[in-house]
Length: 137
Image (cartoon, helix red, strand yellow):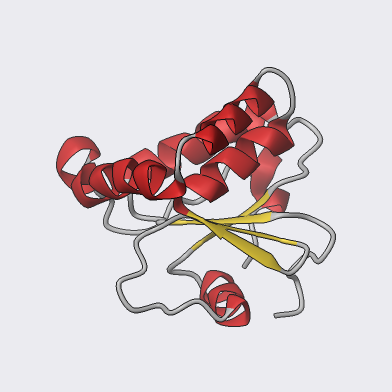
């Protein structure tokens, strides 16, 4: 994958999930420098990055943040993205005081219900031209 940035964190997300797409749309204006790049899990770039992380794709139902060769999943990914956004979002790091098993149980509950609660698209979103450089693939 020649266009994968090695100097930027990449957030892999469910490209057909309305909640996930909404979160990406929330993040973009809060990262005006474009530090975070994005790729749907369903895209070729997303699949290749997942393979590089050596995570099992069986039952993978999580956002994944790939940064400097490290993969963050579920609540750890959410907290790390908030940290990357800076003030005031970086205060989400206090979430690490909650045991990961508890944080991930809440994450899994939302993930299991996201299509019922927020709906699902037929295909992955197409980014607007002004932010298309933030998307891989």
